[in-house]
Length: 184
Image 1 (spheres, rainbow, N blue to C red):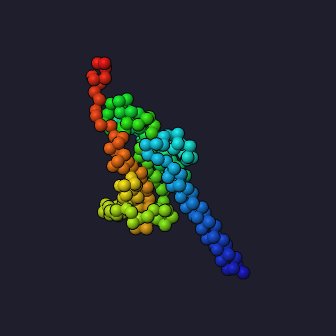
Image 2: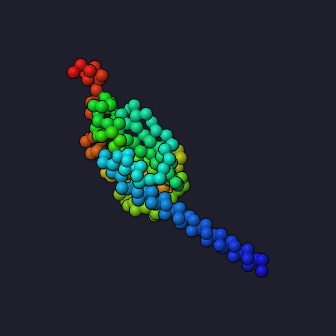
Image 3: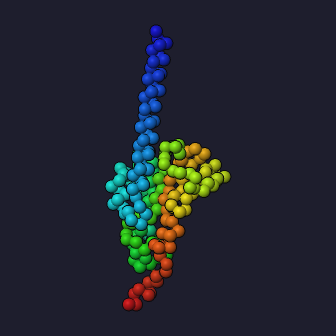
């Protein structure tokens, strides 16, 4: 009788654990679904912060023409690069000529590996690279500005960065000197 109870308790434990893990994968996929709503050079900080429940872990000062905010999410870490304003405002080639707090780079790092099959990526549209230092596999689609970092069948991080067309359109093209702006 005790053996039957032990087996039943074990099966209940396995079943509950499986339900928990399925729920976790759903939540992690919800993060990606929300992330897809963001559009580089169109979305802003308010858009990002209204989509996610977060804690800000760190924020850079923005002295280089952009600032990076590191968010802790449940099940992942989100890193977002924001503009500090028009090129003429920050007098640097290091940024983009867009309004303050405009999103131009996003990285979502999951706390655990997830299967590629959990996502809607068509890997035939990506170039595959192997990184030998840490056995990572990187899938890149420069046309879409997406990079996927993981392993053979798993994904750890999703990055969105400017495409070549966006770089050409938005990147600050000239450096501004303080002397040229104060003489007017």
